[in-house]
Image 1 (cartoon, helix red, strand yellow):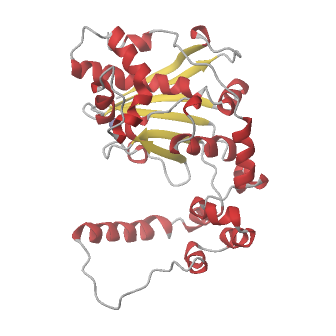
Image 2: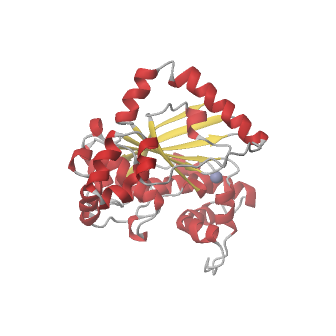
Image 3: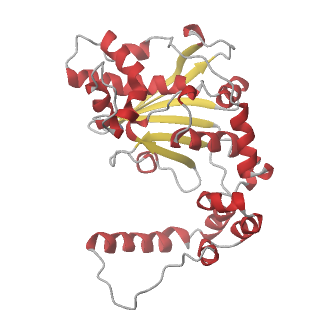
Length: 307
Ligand SMILES: [Zn+2]
């Protein structure tokens, strides 16, 4: 029963709405040159200053983060007193120095190119859970994947309005022009458990977690309807996968995603990492490109099981 949704060829889907104003915003924020993946600059942390100060924009693009730090007068100041470094950060410091020696300096040309631009093929949406880092389990190297992580790896539909996840999507799709969006779910997801624990009448006003995971309510409802014979843990596992499919369909509610999928320049994929068995399921959304999204237009293809 828990596997039945992947054997089904069709999925339900919400309709899309216009997002031309958001597309216009992209060009305002990032500038026309950023439409080319080859020259996209990625110093997002300078975005606010860059928007309001054209001079700083030029400096931010030319200079290192350290020199820009001086411009903004936020340069860290030493107290002159030897400070105790916690063991936790001693470990991180050593790891960073190892990375610098073994990777950054060893492949300096590669990292020099990355300092100038990025052109990742993947946009990955994964859970914030500490056990499911996509770079660790799928081996993404710097520059290969634009990643956003949130509780329960959810993609809200376009009509929900702006949030961190769709801001990252907008940049990855419209500016970086990624070729693939991969939504990765996982076993024992606390966020999905919180979603499945929601009460029907829960107004989600007393918890940030509830207010966020309510995005997955349609997946919860579908799980409750199709897997009512399973116990709660099994229903959670079912919903971990169901919510991925719902997120894939929610991606199509963004016009600039739907357009690219229809044209064949962007593909949408789901992934499920089971860290108990250490297996990975991967599948792709087969969208036929009809203007009206219906059950018949969406199906799963290229399903693989890596074990
Ligand atoms: Zn999770």
